[in-house]
Image 1 (tube, one colour):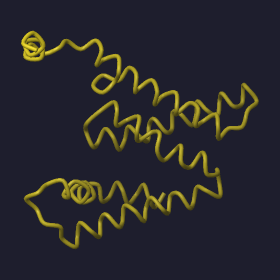
Image 2 (cartoon, one colour; image 1 turned 180 degrees about the horizontal axis):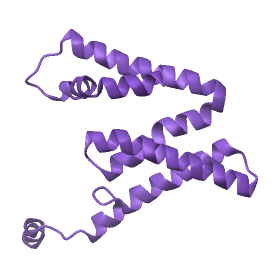
Image 3 (cartoon, one colour; image 1 turned 30 degrees about the vertical axis):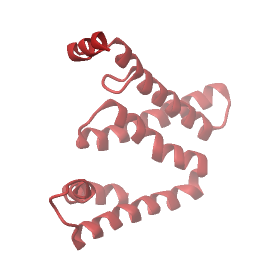
Image 4 (tube, helix red, strand yellow; image 1 turned 60 degrees about the horizontal axis):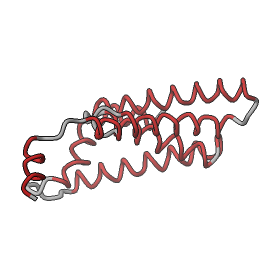
Length: 149
């Protein structure tokens, strides 16, 4: 709960601190370093608190897979932060239902559902998906370059 409240309250400064390193015009200052350290501490606190409750596999799966899935689906920071939570929640509920019906452990079922969502986003995502790359029309300049080779 502390992690969620901190991320919501400090959303703008954390966003600026996270992307300030990519901008060559700004120098690194101590406030952005403090916010990056805060992000790392919040991640560590979330991992440590969840390890005892759900185990390593589910903790890592819930930390990495929703974020990677939503990264393939959108480019907006707000959509990524809230979409990752929605994907994680949906995957957890679907995994729990599947584990109940199939009589399998819940942790691996949740990770399998989240993994399936990631593979679906990787294959059929609107911008970065493999299918959209194959179906996307090639640019005329690329076609003209191919004629002159």
